[in-house]
Length: 435
Image: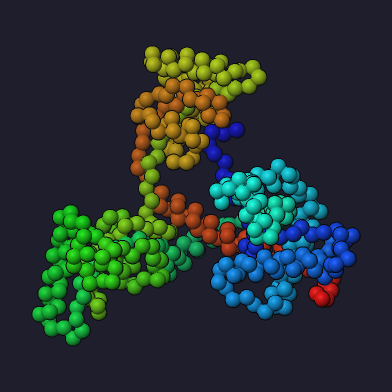
């Protein structure tokens, strides 16, 4: 057990689903006299009714998106292949020991309802309007969870990324310069085509005067509305977020060295003079500074023999001794039940989000040198002492994190496609006429 939060393995979703819900595969004996089998996948079947239901759902979805519907025969062929692959993956998950219980399905169903600001009754009504049901959605959720967990076990958890790959990725992105996105505002002082030197100088003088007003604290949006010749002048010159690859190189080079709130030196292009203000930026070269806290603590765990009240009382007694001059680290070595006890309870420099919320909130409320009252967290009861704080540039660590994340996603997608193909190819599949 540790005070620090464990990284959570995000449940990897399968390929984007074309519809809200789909039917679970039926056993071979379930075909009705009005239905017929159109595919056999190992020991399970897909029926014509299932494909027709899936077709109607996709048809409705495409109509909502104003997307032209492909020819029915082509779409049905594509949907049937998708259904075959889904069923083969579900069978693989079940045959290799993966189980999804009813409680997990209900929790997922409740999350979907909550995301749509509905309860289960409201969700059932909404589904009924679409010709679906809660039971069909439960089946879809169960099957998606089966596939997602099989993917997580067989694919995602086996992805390895080396330091050399991260360095190579960062070098490539630095050369391309397109990974960073900029939120910026812009004022244009245009120069007429075939302008005389006197006209150019007059326009430059106006642009320099705007820069001077900005330096003196004038409002950028107000100056844009007053002087800018750009189409978005009345919107304060705001461009919103733009990636470096979709901006003029002149703008990118001017914005790169800026910090949020800074204004670039005057730029000249064929259109005239440009004034750029960086509002924010995000991406691999965006500077990120966080407040780190150097802290230490004493942890008393609760169990069958140590109640909540006992743990709190022990810490109150230790705090009284600290207040009377006993060194915090000495008591931590003697009494703390955390792995940090041998270091006098020292946790080193802690970043925001590194510890559980209860601990972090109490730590953030302390001044350097101050010791907390007993604080409860999921791990037990703590005394916390803040030693010092600092603003730390964690840009490099963030760059490596984003690079690792991007490489992992790319590798996982490639490995997933191979995995799906292998399972599909190894399944016994018999396709029959659709009509």
